[in-house]
Length: 141
Image (tube, rainbow, N blue to C red):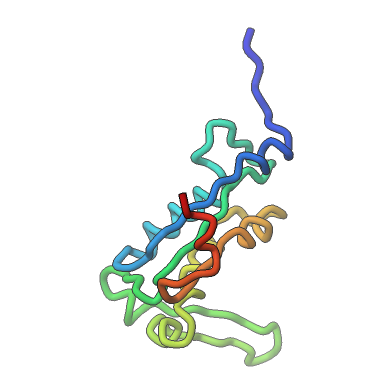
């Protein structure tokens, strides 16, 4: 009779790898699903939902991400402060002008499960608007 293998937290942390993604010309939704899978660790054979076994992810060229259809004109990011008349809407185009990294961050954040592990997973995601990043030493062979 075979038993289910559950990795320990130390084993999950020791098996973490670094992934580098160039977002130039990639579609927002398809890229963010791949990033969410890497952050959760679903690509690993010992994935366990209640253990944080995901990897580190570095995304470059976030300013060159694209969306399909009319999303560039129609997509709106909504937030509310909790106070009366505290609603704020930011169109996609203005968000791309102000901070394109936030667009990818919002997409990945909303694809992760809403639990205590989400904040830890998001800390392992690093997004840069240009091609240069401070984690280049992690990918040299």
